[in-house]
Amino acid sequence: MAESFKKPLWLWGSAVLLFTVAAISVSYFLTGYQASQLNEQLRTQQKQLQQSVPEVPQQTEPVLKEHPETDVSTLLTQAARQNNVDLYYQQSPENAEQWLVGANGTYQNALRLVASIMQAQQEMRQPFPFTQTLKWRDTGENSGKLSWQFLWLSAGSPAPSEPSAHSLFKSDFPDVIAEPIECLGKPEMQSDIHISDWSLVQLIATQTSPVKKALLKIPNQPPLTLTESSWIADPLIQLQDVNGEYAEFKHWQKQAGCWSAKPLKLHLTKDSSSQ
Image 1 (cartoon, rainbow, N blue to C red):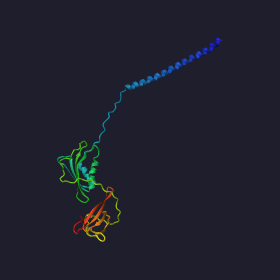
Image 2: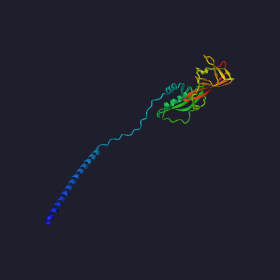
Image 3: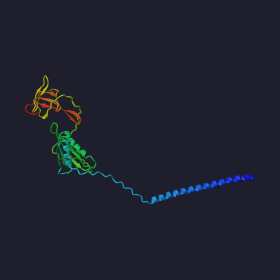
Image 4: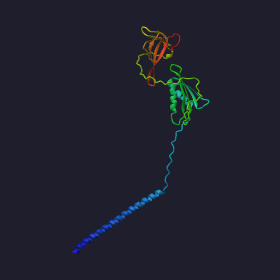
């Protein structure tokens, strides 16, 4: 019976021994493979460390755009042509940075001249006009004179604390007052009357009763009779009231997309033009 137990024990022991040997062999080979892989990675890293490190480019400051030197007289002349004003200018003999600009024309066009020059010099590194005085004087019904004194400063120049005492102005003009335009719609009217030059129209007779009428004299045209509230198509004018000595009108004009009415008055005269 002892012999019958020895044989299974021997087989079981042999199987355990073979399994142990196989496990040790597999573990040895796997460990060796991992070791070789680790050595390969270490050699690669060592080669990389021995290579020279590429230089990081230094961060440069942003390059500012250089603007060509601005000729002030050319800039003023171009702006005057674009805005349809008569221009004159003078550079101070005592201070080359100081300029006096005069512009004759309508109020809107004269201010557009100033705005267009400001717009042309808006970039950071460009020289710019530092305004010392800006004044306006009426010379006619729809025209006047703008006087603008400024210092032409470079981009790095500090703004002066106060205007220069050496003013180029020879006369005292009232300050410019920018009043907002009353924005109205275009009036509805029916008329086919056209007058080429309103400044030549004369009021030669009036009637206040029973119907208010005004008799106008127009060069190279027959006399024109207007009744109260009647219209002239061009220029767009409406007769508002008639007095024994004068007639009152409203002149409608469109500016900046808005219609506005300006009062006009013609005095009765036989020999003189209207006022």
